[in-house]
Length: 269
Image (cartoon, rainbow, N blue to C red; front, side, top):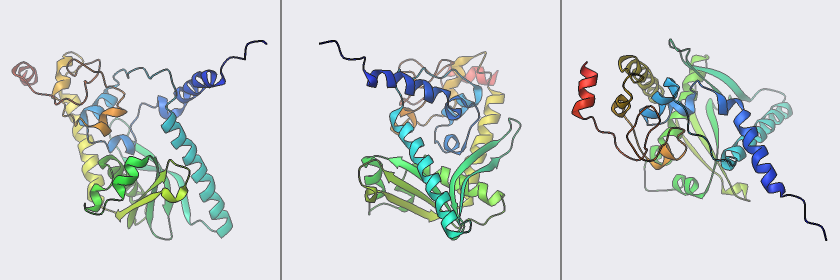
């Protein structure tokens, strides 16, 4: 009996990895609301400075790719619902202006906006940990989802406000990564412009910090840029490099940066 053909799983690993690397989201250099929502200023600064990103594993980012596929499905479903209604209840994947600056600005594509309820709707395709976190009964609403997700939702609200709408609510729909749609959970709170403005102002402050710090000449100065190490921030950070201080090659992640006298002197100079 002849040998079996080569593994299709192995073949598709390479095909899918190459496909993901070619997608606009994978090669974009500008920031969007999802990046602006992270609590780690150093990660934002390294993206703005164009530091080399760590080479991805030679395997497809399977969970994010599933999320992309689910977003396409939800877009198709909402468009069909609009057609059935004979009117536009849902604004789908609308390009929104979030902030302008000398770098060009921050823009994003909102997943959906429910005109019937003046509500931002953002899809998240998540596992059991995020679902359990959102179902907790003993913590404030603001703590049921990650700060990054929450801030992103309000940034989209801000974008819709700039487009002339009056958002009242922001909602994250946590779609279950399981066999049962009814495992999904939703998180909702009133739109708060201040949350978006705070994130935008922090972005402007990071831009000014990068103008003031000669990080290209003195890579040790990266240790001065505030970081917020956490499992959420570091797990998918493209600059995470285990070991060593933060410098022009990346960030160690999950370790607090300290400003020593040498670096402080470089700043003063």
